[in-house]
Length: 324
Image (cartoon, rainbow, N blue to C red; front, side, top):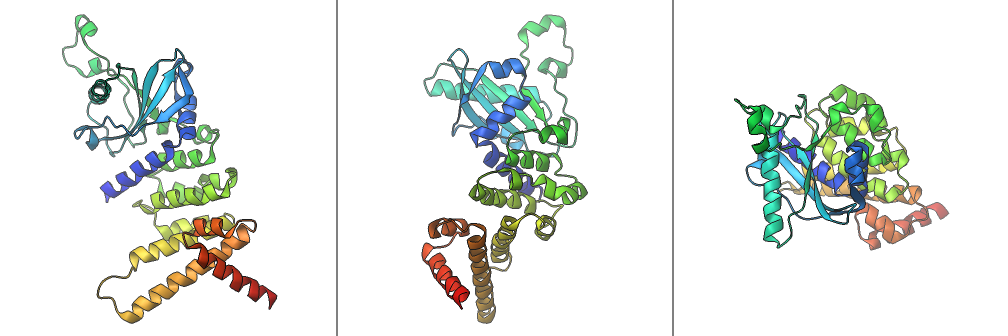
């Protein structure tokens, strides 16, 4: 189960910060001023690279970005999530190994070695000690310091960010993700504040984006060992109609997964599940008609994850019913 939760957090982390606007804002809000002023954040570009090897993978997952410096030189910024419930034993040494992996990849690609900025995103229970490598060494004397690398990194410790500070972020979905990850071990807090945490529902302008973001958030929450899907649904029903639409979508997916048609299932039960699936799908499409009256059939089909012909059929039936 712990591995499942870690995978869910890694996925949420990557789905969130692969969006450049969120990666930029995190750096703008959390990085030292001199570091922000040294980078052209508008040039930030996600790559498909990873500097995490098999040994580092036990603790870290990463996203690697290319970014130009103010001097128009190449640099790389790595977002690194620490995905264990306990601290890695020697962070500076692991970061040095991580950077070496990156520089080796640069050389292998026939590139001139460029700076690699490691940004560790930490949201664990224990306090993180941000220390240079020399502080981990026994028998360390001042004479050794010129020959000992620091292994430094930029640390974003969510426990050090107040909820009020997080709510000052510009993007609603980013606020939601940061609050969820910060309080992931606090079951009562999450349940009691879920409506306020799902802040992007009211703040994001594009409704279709909100629908997709609900998918991401519900997947994360239902993978938690502390909160089940029904509790999420009950606590979030006070949000407006789009949330109701999302509960229907999640019911379809959840029931398909939990009660899905398997080999050997009785024909009668199979038919019942199919009919239940059909009923909820029709309900969802009709609800989207109400929420998005100006959306085309194609747009409704994309939101509902069904064929456009199916949407056209239900719209025709709905119009006939209204006339009668």
